[in-house]
Structure formats: structure tokens, C-alpha cells
Amino acid sequence: MRAPRSALGWALPLSYVSLSAVALGQSSGSAPSGGSEAAEAVQATPGGPPVTVEVVPPPATPPQVFVPGYPQPGTVLDAHLPSGSRAHAPGETDSFDLHGGSDSGSSVVTGTGEAILLEPQLGSGQPMVVPSIHVVKQGDTLWDLSGQYYQNPWNWPQVWSLNPQVKDPHWIYPGDELRLRPGSSIQSALASGAGGGGTGMGGAGARGQQGLTPGTIVLRDQGYIGDPKENVWGELVGAREDQMLLSEGNEVYMLFRPGVPLKPGETLTIFLPIRKPPRVAGGRQPPGELVKIIGTVRVDAYNEKDRIARGRIIESLDTIERGAKLGPVGREFSVVPPKHNQVQVWARVLTSLTPLVFMAQNQVVFIDRGEEDGLEPGNRLRVLRRGDTWRRNLKTASRMARDRVRMDSRKNVDIESTPLKGNDEKFPYEVVGELLLLKTERYSSIALVTHSRRELVAGDRALATVGY
Image 1 (tube, rainbow, N blue to C red):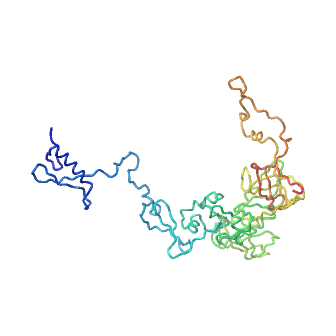
Image 2: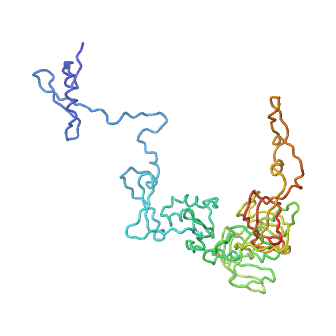
Image 3: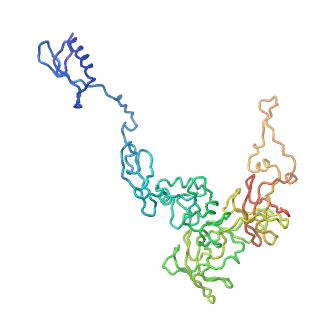
């Protein structure tokens, strides 16, 4: 049997090597302070010169396993990101700073670990007060508002999550009310004067009021005119600047129809007609139109003889071009207290502000009855519906929707059709919703759905009863 070789290459007695290994293993617990691997002097043969043998301790961690197709252990997965977006090891500092300047608050965002922390800026000494509500101004974005109030622009998804009415986070509009704190109420915040320095919408859609009174509904970019012949006062026909597309700040020229009671300093809504309320079976077709609101103009001077006015665009929700219509389109409606009905009137729900198939609570709808029928703001109408609700839904289903399995049949599978007896028109009425009138036109009205047990659709009947 051949003797094993030492680290230096010559043969050692098997028994001596084993004893040396045991001895070295016992002494390896007290490693030299120099930090190098442990080493001991041994004798290759009795009485011979000493030989130094290095002892390599076992690894402190188990061997790493490399799996094909996966990143190797130790790979920094976010190394491609900017410094401020990467995770940092505990104790590792980072110098990135998202402080937006003197107007964006008094905190600096620093990155540690996997979180972004807010730390007070040295010397500020004052905490940042976040209001409940911010009223959007021209140029605001969710990114900027998050940086302004939270000192963290990357936190904009939280602001978006608090405002489900914002469908696209890239598009917010002047006059929008945005919640900034969980559980806050827009109406209570506006009643207490909170608003982040924004402006509200005046009676004809102009900006000019600080905040809004509680119980106010403001239409953003869609509205309704009861009579286009009376409510369309004129149109935008020119501008001082050499531009085709106009917006806030442009000086414009306007042409008005004869007899318009126009005064300098008055604000008018700039809008485009988009559609008429749909015709519904059994309902009246009023002359009203749904319009798209694209801005607000202030009249600075008016020549009554030529019917030409000069003004400035003070709000733009979209690009404004020549040919846009002008008029006192109402955008702000007060939720008036209920008022007893003086007449009994049957009406039809025509449409909602947006072209929805189904309407429900807290949405604005239009009905085909108004002042000529004795209705007033504050009147309440109950939306009534009768018949077998399930039977009505069969109109959009296949015949198989009526089929059912006979459980007491001796056959393997015995199918029968559900019987539909009785006339829906003879069934009693059931209340499925309630409307509160906000504004009455001559032949139509604008109403708020204050209650709904089921979804409302165009053509539903609504009843105003005397004394209700």
C-alpha cells in the first residue's frame, strides 16, 4: 500500500498523517490574529526537519448551486435602475434627492433598503400639512401633487387610488377635486375651506370662487343646454395671436347673435354640441343638447352695434378652435332641499350625462318633463317599474335560459321550459329609484339619482306625486 503524499509532494507515514490531521484540527480553533489560514509545523520523519502544512477550514456557507436559465447567486437584479430606484443593503447610504425646490415642501426623500422614507430636512423644523382635498389648477399632475404634499413623486399611485373617479392618471382637469387623505370627504373638506389653493367653477363655468359650497355638483367637461336657440349666444371667430389651436391666455374675438344681454366682465362657457338625448318609446323629444365643455372665456369689451366682443380665455379643458360655441352653460348645480310636488307628472328618463347604458345612484340624468309641466327644482320623482324582472331579462338571452331540469322525472334528463304566465303590464309598480331635480328647463329637467335599488335605463318611467 502506497503512503499518501503531503502538500509538499513527498510521502508521509499513514499513521503520522492521521495524527497530525487530528492535532491540527484541535489547534485550528485558535487561528492566528493575522487573518491568514491556520498553519502548523510538523516533522515529515522522526528527527527530520520541520515542514509547514496549511490547513484550509471548511467553507462558512454551503456551496452555491447554479441553475441553468436563472440568474447566478449574487446577481443584482435592479442594477440597471437609477440609484434612487434600487434597493440598498442595510447600512448602505444613498445620496439621491427628490426635493423639488422651495415650493414642494420641506422634506427630502432618501432611499434605504427596499422602502422610500420621508425625512425632515435639516433646519426646516415644520411638518408638512397635507390637506384633505386639492382642487386641480392648470398644469397640475399627480406626479407633481405627490411631490408637493408627500415629498415623494413616486407615490402618485396612492393619490390615484384615493380618487377612483379619475379614470386615466395622465388626465386631470382644472376644477377637479382630488382626495389626498384616506377617508376624507370632498364635501366636508370644501365646507371647511380646504382646497389646496385651487379655484372652483362659477355659475356659468367660470373660475372665480374659492372652493365650493357643500352639496354642490360641478360638471367637468360635459354639460347640457335646454334650448340651443336661446342658450347658444355666439361663437369664437378669431384670435389676436397667429395660432390655429387656442388655449388659456389667448386673446380672442367673438361674434354674438342679436339681442344677447352681454356685459363686459361676464364669463361664458366655450363648448361643442355632441349629441341630442336619444328618443325613447313613450317619451317626449325635448330640444335640449348634450355638449362638450372645452373652456371658459371672459368678455373684456363688447361692441353692441357690430356684435363683436374681445376677451381672454381663462380656462381650457381641451384645444379650442374657431367655430366653438359660446353661452351660459350651467356647470355648477346646488343640491337643493326637497320640495313638495304641486302636480302629478309622469316623466321618462332620457339619458345620463355620459352615454351610459345603465345609470345608478349619484349620477346626473335628464328627464323629458320640465317647467311647462309644473316641475320645480327640489321636486322628487320615484322611478317605477313593473313586471317580472327575470322575464324581462330573457329578451336578451337565448331560449335555453328558460329551460330547467325536472328533478322528479324517471327519465335520465327531462327538460321543461319555465312557464311565463300573466301580463307584465298588469303587475303592480315597484319603486327602483328616486330622482331629485337640480334644474328645470322649459321642456326637460336635470336630476340627480339619489337612490337606486336596480340599474336605471333610458325609457324608465318616473312619477311625481302631489305632496311628496
